[in-house]
Length: 182
Image (tube, rainbow, N blue to C red; front, side):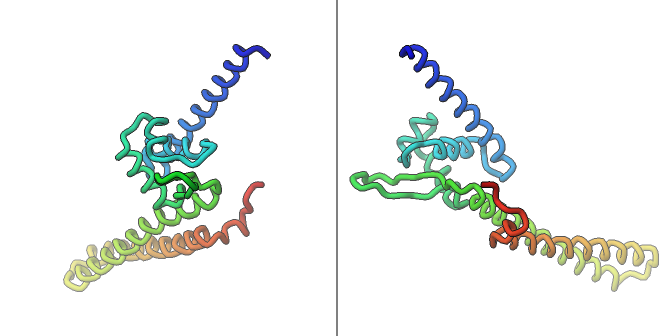
């Protein structure tokens, strides 16, 4: 094959990977991750070697501070890990290759946090409504409060069920029910 044709093949490859990295970045939004951090993950995922912050900055044309913040976020979510290579003094990073592991960690952390907050808010609302219930003699209001307390109790029970689901995801038991694709 001619050099020109091979150059076009490399260009097509790079365009295809870049397009997929954009998809990753866009979809990371679902997990509360900014597109720039999603792009960083995509670049690390497709990198053949671990990368330094300088490598990432060059690849993404972003500041070193942004890279550092992004790597820290991805590391906290267990989507990126630091690694060591003999002879290189700078920190090296690579993506977590197991997307199932990344998902369970990320999903668990995000959902647990919000669900715990929802349980607390439901409990507070129930307590406040029970105080109003004790102090009112208005039968219509008492009836309305009791219906709302029942609704809040239902919501609280749902959130407690959701916490069990989150635990199943975090523990990896979910893969007993829905096996990973090979």
